Image (cartoon, rainbow, N blue to C red; front, side, top):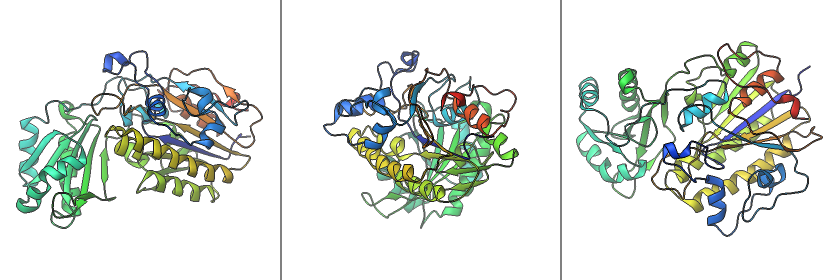
Length: 396
């Protein structure tokens, strides 16, 4: 018999907990997203994470460890090369990424790519540099609206992003241009992890606002993952937030698009009120997109506190045969230099109302223990070529 009927795996996007041994190779020595947030603020109210054991795992200035936490906890080390969202999530579900995705942070995209994209879309391209999504709009959106030119930019991630004003550029046209860009960037030398449509509204600088009609065009995982195995076994595999985009829909039976991380938790809470058998896989992106990349320590801290409130609501709904896993996909230390992700360990927190034990588990050498544990619970074999060992027997 399976141990749990429903498993909720929640990824707090970018909540790293200390530099990995090879962090210096990435320019990230000494980083610690959660630890440095705690050190940089006066108050930090996260009672539900505290109950599960976050402060027992990772020392925090304002949050004390507790004598008997509700759950188990451990550090997970990333086996794959890289520190991006897709690499982290794909590894969780069993894929070992040895070749990092292409980035164009320092140089922008090459002229050959620009020429082909411009020819096929019929648009003059402006931007072509690494920038934040809000800054690029203040700089170039008025020009795009006036001329019909197309804003394209990148970031520290492996992404090509195209902005389009919903009123003047149009959503369908934006999506069309992004589909062309995705096709072009399938070439090895230009292969970015995601092409992202970034729609916005507003007419002048200071009024521009990105909308929730964003759409990601991601690479498909290069092999079958734990999600495919679960779906093929007839189980429910429900996604919330960016999971659909990260896996390009592979291995999912239902998906829910989120407007924010709080909304994502509200959706997860509603799913917890329903009857299903399988996995609810959640990504909460605001921590990364709104606060980590923008190096906003206080904003990041407040987002964690908002999550903690919703976490408490979710925990009240959990049944004896439910398992909750909380983790992250990489770091994004808001006290670090630059705007890039940071190469860090991630937390693993596990809780079920049926657990009799608690405490520290051995650190794992890969995020893939998550997918392996979930599949073993449902008596499903991991796909051939995947990595990771289950720790299900330790969660008791």
